Amino acid sequence: MPVEIKNIQPGGGVCMRIELAWGCWRRWYLKTFRRRYVAHMLAKREGPVHEDGANACPHEVLDPRDLKFYRNQGGYYWSAENDPFRWRDQLPFARAGLVELFLLGGAMLALTVILAFAFWPLAIPTAVVGLCIVWFFRNPKRIIPSELGAVVSPADGHIACIEEVEDEFIGEPAILIGIFLSIFDVHINRTSMDATVVGLQYRHGKFLNALRPESARENERMEVRLQQNSEPRRRFVIRQIAGAIARRIVCWVGPGESLERGEQFGMIKLGSRTELVIPKEEGLEILVSLGQKVSAGSTVLAKYSQEG
Image 1 (spheres, rainbow, N blue to C red):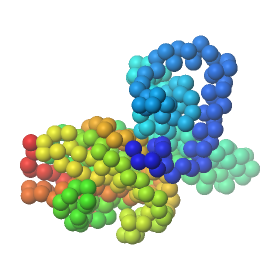
Image 2: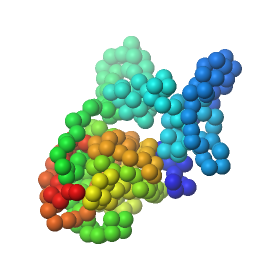
Image 3: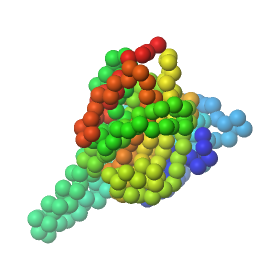
Image 4: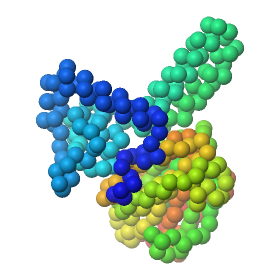
């Protein structure tokens, strides 16, 4: 794992700092008033930890909530049957955005109620903003295509570009498909093929409008490098690129982690851009066109005819 990637949201953020501060108080409360619960969870906790025996997190790990921002660092974990908070993954909202949903959505709700008592027409704009926040963090279920050779979209949005490029990681001519995500799109990213994470590259940068072509080169971004699990073991890249509004990239996977086609691996909070780079091969068929609406995990962007 690159040293600059210390958690799933390397760009930080106010809501993240608030949640981490709350975690300090929560751990103090648990150790002071719920010692039996702490002992039970520690007994169920599994490893491995780092080779030197150090905790992969910068704080104590008392239950699975302490791992939220550090799940890509390895170390402690709880199995599914021993995780009492696993139900949060089944919510119709992105778990990585629950705090923003609670804080921002709650603030809009409170303001709406106050304005409604004062003069109800004033409450309409805040109610609309609150609904937009809820809508933004939604996490709908998707039907993942199963046909051989299919390459599914890594993001919701509209196709912004399709071009031939040279990519250092892929090592051969490639096709880049850029997807623009508006603030009304689902912002959860999914992998395009069954693959294993080979590496991650995070780069600080600007926050230009994601519609501008130079945003792909100059904006903050996370590059997820993957390789197919089966022959011909193609390499491909998914880039999460921040935008003028979306300034928080979340990626909760780490090197060596295996992902199924359409599986979630991260999100970008508010409008942004996602790029997919795949090898250009004989028999590769591009199935989308510029401006087309696509859905992460369900829209087939391209298809390879040659499979192992």
